[in-house]
Each structure stands twice: as C-alpha cells, then as structure tokens.
Length: 518
Image 1 (cartoon, rainbow, N blue to C red):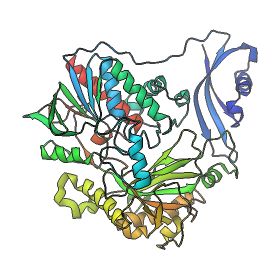
Image 2: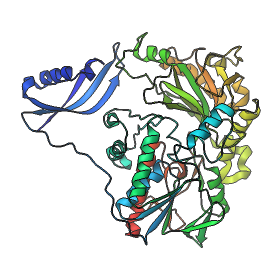
Image 3: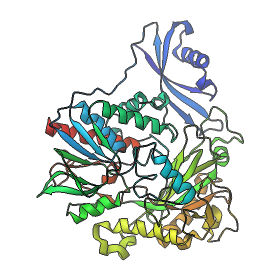
Image 4: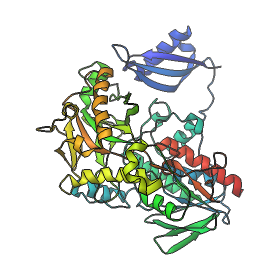
C-alpha cells in the first residue's frame, strides 16, 4: 500500500525531484532506493510564517509497482437521434452539459448568441482599443462564456456539487496543463483556455452534437406550461425534448424574455463595487515578506472580507499578475473585470472589492418588480459611462484618496487598456456602497498591512459578480418549478459562481435530463 505524506519544502526544493525524494525517504524512515514512485496529489503555498514554504501532499510507493494513473475521460455513446436537447449558451455550464448528454446517448444542440472563441478576439480588440461594444460578442458573451477571456480560474469549494477532479481531468484531456490537477488554486489563463474550449467544441461535434454560433434565442416555444423549443434570431423555430437554459449572469434580455412570457423568476442577492489594482510587487512583498519574489513562488494573491454596517464587503475574482478588462455587454455602460494569462506575469494585481446590495438599495427601482436588482445594476453602469467622454475609459481614484473623499491629482499606470481618468467615485457609486468601501479599505489595511496605499487605484464599476436574478428549479429534478422540460442551469440561473461550479451544474442538469429521456 502506498503511504500518503505531507512535505514542507522550500519553494525551490518543491520543484526538485531529488529533494522531494530525499524528504520523502526521511519522513517514511526508509532508504531512497526503496521508493519506486512518488505521485504528487496536491501543491499549495503557506506564506503565514516569515519564510514562505510549499506544502506537497504526495503518495509514496515503497517496494511495489504503482498502478496506472486513475484518469477519467469523456466516453460518448452513439446518440439516439430521436432524443434532442437544446442548450442555450456555450459557456462552461452549456458545454459540460453537452458532453454529459453525449455520454448518455442524447443529442445536444447548442445555440450561442456570440461568436466562436477565435472570432471573439476581434470584438474584444474593438472594445479595448476603440470602445465599440458588440452586444452579442464581448468579454461575457461568446463561446466559452465569461471565463474564457477573463482569467480561467478553476478554484471552487463546491465539492458537494459533484466530482471536481472529473471536470479538471476533462479539461486536461482537452489541452489544459496537468498542473491544474494538483495546484490548490488551479488556473489555466486566458491565453490557453481558448484552445481548450475549441477542443471541447470539436469533441461535441465529432460525437454527434450540434453547435450554432451567432444564434440568439429571441423567444421560447411554450405550450401552456411546457417548453417545446426556442426561436432563434426572431424567425427560426427549433424543437427538442428538453431545453437547458445556461445563458450566464449577464444575459439581461433572457431575463426580460422570461418575465414577458410569464415564466417564474426571482430576485437574487448580488454585490457591486470597484476593481482595485496594486503593483504586483507590492502584493508580493506584503504576502511573502520578500522585496523580490522567489522565482519558484507564484504571484501572490489575497482574499479579504469584513462586515461594515451589517453588510458584507469582500474581495472577488482576485487576479495576481493580471489585467483589468472592459466587460460591458451593451453600449453606454462601464463594467470592469479582471483576467490573467497563464504565467501571471503582468506587473499588476487586481481584485474586485464589492458590497452586498440590500433590498433598501432597490426601493427606487421597485416598479421593475423581480428585475429591480438588474435595473439598479444597469443604472450604476450607465451613470458611470455618462460621467466619462463616451468611450470605455473608466473613472479611477487612488485608494487612499478614495477613503478621504479626495480627487486624485494624477493617476499611476494601469493595466486597463482603454485608459482611466481621475474622478470622485463617491459621487458615482451608490452612497450606501461607497461609504462602506471607504471603511472596508481601512479594515483591510489592518488585516493586510500596506494594502491601503496611493500606489493602488480603485476603478469603477465592478458590477457583474453574479446574476441579480434566479430562475427557480426543483432541487431534485433540476426542472423549472412550473415549466415542464425547462432546466435552468449555471450562473445565469443563479446556481453557480465560476467556471468549475458552472461546469459541475451543467453535468448535474444533463444527468437529470438523461434520467427523464432515457
């Protein structure tokens, strides 16, 4: 039987096979020659002590032949062509649902409003350099969903949702680096994830699925309380045995369509705030206590949370060695998000810092009913846009200046390509949120000394943390609580919060559909 042990090594030794072997032999009280194989299970960084260390969880095989690696791969079944399932959205929820349906011999038909992952790049360039927002192809919409070009972080604590390792192995099977199987906070990067997405598409097509881009679902085909199919691009009818709705957290038109067709939806808690950018070297120094980061350590990150006046304020989607990107999904709004390349080698670190939105904030929007949160979110984004020059330039303020309500006389360099301009964010953000951010930044500085500095900037608006709307479903069948054959799925339905949880939800919904259509 192999022996599972935990090694605490210097960053350099954690990547040195000889050092790992020696440390394993000592901990197991054996000779190195008795070790036939060491298998890495998990790798993480512990920076709590004065000198950061790397913790390796390994499996040591002693005087025995190790069994083959336990890998899980996609195993399709020949589709039964008379059983079709429409999937609206080609993000992680939609694509992993499609793979799972094929494993059960069902035919997935994916409709994606945006473009394929490669063609999306032209529209990302247009918004970055020219401020032109394509409402169907942007950082949120298009093949792969919002995560493809905004980081590709794979960390999730949603182990109860399903087999996380299964999802990671499918990603590796389709071209993701094997390190994601062992890193405590796995990450692919926006330069590598598009290839993975393309490969998943190819697998779906090769095994009998269909994928249609530039296919915007403009209506549902409803027969009383039963979903029969969808209408694409206002004129093309498509029928199926079930419809999986996996449209993502920013598909506002779908929420409006659901309300118009009297399909039950609910308001959902969400948060809104700013994106904070520091020099990465400063975050490294604070977290690692090193003026120059050890070459074997990853770019340092942080996670901060506090309560201010009975509301949660927290960091969100932290991107070490990353960039701030424009994430608007319609003209006339300013939305920012963060991303990193696989090497995380940008000189900047950024993170959303957001405040929970409460019902009292939505009182001026109560006439919109269930969509009050959506309209509140939109109103802030549009107000920030109107304050600018009509481009995707974003308002910014040095962090200490923000806490003292002072307009910054000059701004530091930023990773945000459209550019930033100096503004008083207190006047642009809802007062209840801005005032809490001012207090939170001071509290964060107590927890992370050096965080509050005028070397850092706050950029508005970080508003797409999650969907402000939930599409309720039965917890056992995953069906909509009222409409037959409709399966809400992923972030847009309110049941996920990132690539991994969305993928897991896609798998779970697909299994539920397969259980009905078998």
